[in-house]
Amino acid sequence: MEVKAAVAYTPGKPLTIETVQLAPPQAGEVLIEIKASGVCHTDAFTLSGDDPEGLFPAILGHEGAGIVIEVGADVKSLKPGDHVIPLYTPECRQCDYCLSFKTNLCQAIRGTQGQGLMPDGTSRFSIGGDRIHHYMGTSTFANYTVLPEIAVAKIREDAPFDKVCYIGCGVTTGIGAVIYTAKVEPGANVVVFGLGGIGLNVIQGARMVGANKIIGVDINPKKRELAEKFGMTHFVNPQEVAGDLVPYLVDLTKGGADYSFECIGNVNTMRQALECCHKGWGVSVIIGVAGAGKEISTRPFQLVTGRVWKGSAFGGARGRTDVPKIVDWYMDGKINIDDLITHVMPIERINDAFDLMHRGESIRSVVTF
Ligand code: APR
Ligand code: ZN
Image 1 (cartoon, rainbow, N blue to C red):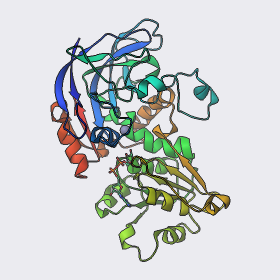
Image 2: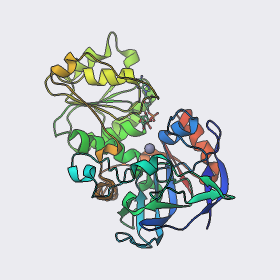
Image 3: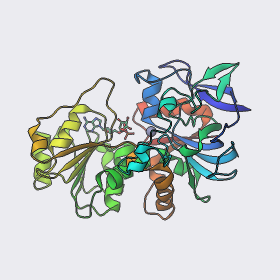
Image 4: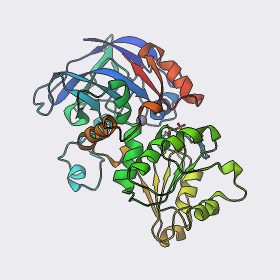
């Protein structure tokens, strides 16, 4: 069938709206009509050409929501008409990773997904017979896309697509890091580095679980107001702190953070996030994606004396199990997504979404079809 997609042909160049051929879903796959998709920093990172694993040409996008239109052979858990969120982290419930119950990093289709292909090693997308790569297994910048059944979360039908698409990445990444990765307990003191689309979701996750102090750190004072609305109790602008930031944060938390979260992607703030944690038990979670080739450092004594350094991908959430619950939290008013979606535009204007992101003017832009 013919679909409308934003194609990334060349690193560093804008996307091009094209008519693309989409082959039908094969065994274990489903065809999804994408209704809305968020535009995330990870899409921009790959489009920039800095992502060493980026493939071109490709249809980017990994934060979508839509409706199942057709299912391939052997598909059991989904049927046409189901409302769904595509998952770049699948959940097969059979691999060693899934069965460990210690990680959300299902490996069932890892190899082919990284190559921009479906599990049988081919692409469903082409133009004039030439292959177009899938991206993160999701390719949500197209009005129709094909995904493996194990990479699709079924959600309730009354949830608005142009809001809950954000649960496909940013919301779950932030809230999940609090709930599933760090398991923050009521009364904990939390420090959040970076108050963008990820950090604000960490803040509302911390509020949801009943954290005590929720300290936001950002060099942009304009981030303060919205962060307070989401539950931040103290704002720290590192440029206004006389002296070192780490002792200042340790003092503010009366001994150090119980949990800290790095939501910037900067290796210097990753170190500060670890070192502002409480001696003996503080846990620091890295969420931000650092540039290719970057390395983190600290004195080993920081870990010997009980601080823990962790990372979190997709918030540690198991997509098919946890994403429907997060949609419920949104529908029940427990979490706020509406105030984070600052711009909505048709897919034809997707390049504006990247411009807004680069200028720091959006928290999240959503494209609709
Ligand atoms: N110290 C404090 N705050 C900083 C610093 C710094 N050195 N550098 C940037 N910031 C702040 C910015 O002012 C901004 O508010 O970090 C925030 C980052 O927010 P966004 O640009 O909206 O990024 P976000 O979408 O939240 O993603 C953050 O996670 O998904 C990854 O690749 C993404 O690494 C990025 C990170
Ligand atoms: Zn993302």
